[in-house]
Image (tube, helix red, strand yellow):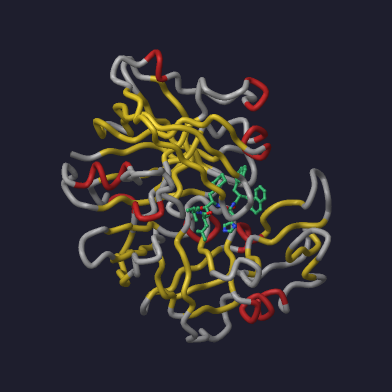
Length: 332
Ligand code: 0ZP
């Protein structure tokens, strides 16, 4: 089997997050979920939430699904890197994405979500695509959608083809030759921490500068908007940007929106991927401001480097769970 579904930016201008249509239950209830390779819980806005915590999101109502079954005595609670949190109980139901159906998928129904989720009016929940070891359901942790689908997939892979200010695609079970150019460069990943962690071979600032061959260990994370890298890398980058400062009040690197920006190149093995300047000129710090927040930020507070959407949309990325697992990057 295979599946293919769009990944649509939730906003017109910044690609702050991407959502993908899924259906749950019988008859199918359609929700728009954020596919997140940085976590492993599949949870949804639900009929068990207080109405004031729901602001336009679609909810899943297990009572209206003939195939829904409560997983008795099971609960979950998750807190993400950005402080957003949610918790609730667990059902199993039929879950489908772009033509790929999994029976008896654990669907974690929210009873409570933090204010950040309530205000994200077009995210109806998340689909974790990290390793199942990170799943927060207790007492028995549950498998991700991908782990459940794996045995029936033609090929135990999924791919992310995220786009700049446009709809991209998540494909499951196959690698679509039409979505990339040249060859896919694979590097091993270490699944033990539960994330898609790989080692980048280094970086370069701008088109003409030399490649600095310094290994950067980081997570490929579709659920993070920006790229978070070591301070030394950012210093090298923002030194080339007129007026750039690391601002305490804005919580990161900012610069005048009209400053010229270099591109940023990172290595995967011998291959090089370039993040265009336009992706790094991420967004005005507030609506209409002439100060812009950078798409490259420091990882020093997170303690781990993250290749979020700003990097992922510059490539076609293969998440390959064959053993040993690996990640593949290709140009497009
Ligand atoms: C984001 O990139 C946000 C945007 C954002 C960045 C930084 C601070 C923010 C503070 C408040 C709100 C957003 C912030 C993504 C986002 C986009 C659009 C709407 C949103 C509404 C609410 C919340 C977030 C929204 N967040 C990253 C994140 O936590 C920031 C980060 N910090 C990463 C550290 N690492 N992403 C998670 C998925 C998000 C969760 C998906 C909120 C959208 C909803 C995970 O992918 C991160 C992952 C950490 C890991 C890769 C190191 C994680 O937390 N996994 C959960 C595991 C639990 C550890 C067992």
